[in-house]
Image 1 (spheres, rainbow, N blue to C red):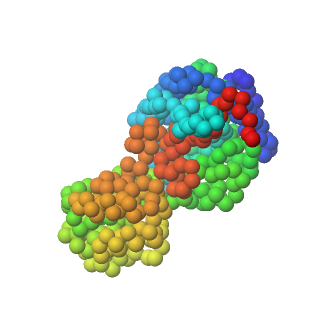
Image 2 (spheres, helix red, strand yellow; image 1 turned 30 degrees about the vertical axis):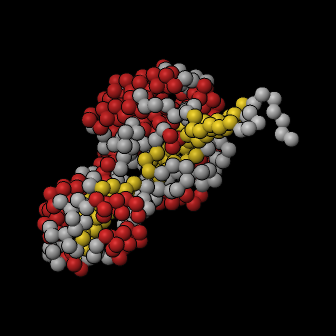
Image 3 (spheres, helix red, strand yellow; image 1 turned 90 degrees about the vertical axis):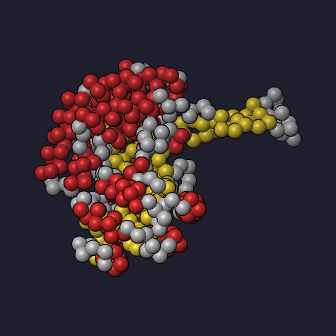
Length: 429
């Protein structure tokens, strides 16, 4: 296969079912070539891709400005525009993440465990690529680079289907990446961007059992719910980031305020943003904490006891405790101790990220043990719920299920395993 394969010349009007099936077949062939490359070769190709991203910065930023203008004209919410927007610093961060992933240890070929049976048979379980992965995502053009980079590093081919909000940004980023990868010996068909925004293409990907090995959706609740409901391909996903921060009675007030403000307001549109704040009834600085959030421009929706602390607090409805705002809006409840906080989180958490702020180590350990979320934190902002911050280089998403991978999914989560058995002529009696 070559860089000028049909992937780049097909009309967008081609039947989506035929298009996806053809691209997936090309990807499966390319994945065999990619998996046969050495770890050093894949890493070198990714460094070249990062170089091409930096060289293409003017073109990428121009494409992004076009997407932003279209989004503003369509009335996209401020949080969505923030997810979409690129600048020189964010683009430099994307290139840096590509290099960071390239330099990570390669999980492919890692021996997970091994044993020898009394009959002399030797067994090894080793990590191998998943195969061909489909990524369906919205708004955030950095996903184009993150997903491609992680898949290539772990020996997987990838089909990328970005949202219409970022169509021009995605195409510009993809073109730069592929230029560098091909220069490094990676088949162009190993990293393909679906060239149509027809929604039928999503359905074709979800039904491509036998051609696509795993689907990873990254986007709003409606997208993820559709993928989980309709897919005939295994799905790795989370629905909501309904993340809690619990301010324990023994929390340091300065730390508690710093963490709460950061967890909610650093970037409101990311899945790691805090959406519910729980304040212990015995925490002495509750009023100051609520006032600080409101003074920073956050709309606070509180229960009855929180409303008594500040007349600017809006009454919370029953739905607020189960809402992912992705905006400068926060639901706040007062709870009577750790047991009540744990009960509230068990009822309302989406299993993404939940945190406790306290100087009481026993309370912290109980929280970390009993909260059944993919990520649990002590004295840290939920905004750290990101693969890069975990030392994973980047992430393909946060998984909240209990099978295969959980939390930030990076290289190891993009592998499966196989058994290798070595004998000396043994036959089974």
